Image (cartoon, rainbow, N blue to C red; front, top):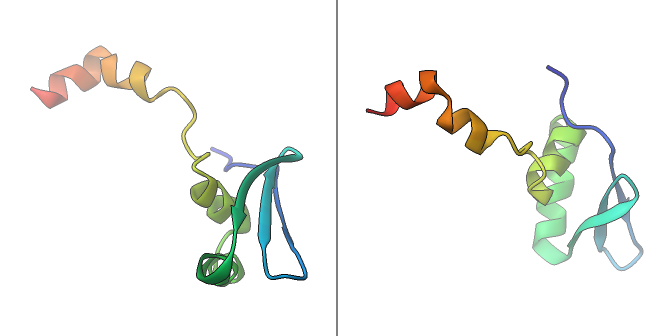
Length: 76
């Protein structure tokens, strides 16, 4: 299963990080959060890190999967 795609980030001169998803601003990070973000991007998979930081790692099918018969039986 392919990971998320379409993320990019820009580091501005004032230290602000702007994360975009398909050319739309998804997050703006400043200060210590921006430094932590840069460390994570440098050490891991950048697309997955940006998806996690922006909250765009869910695909909308969680409710459908939760209601599926095989998953309802497991919760009882």
